[in-house]
Length: 57
Image (spheres, rainbow, N blue to C red):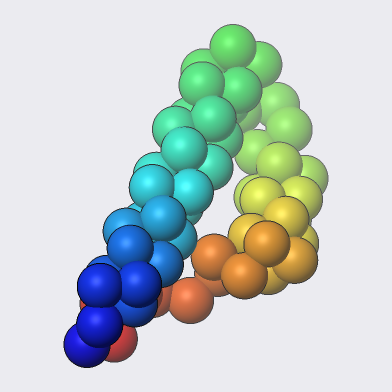
């Protein structure tokens, strides 16, 4: 695996972490009122950004 592949995997992991943290924060602030809609939006966003797959696979 090259240096750029490693960097690409790290960027995906970081993007996924940010997305998960934002989802948690919004769910806390709204009392999970919009958890289902938020989860669907998060999945769509991650798919469009190309961070929906596990970089460790």
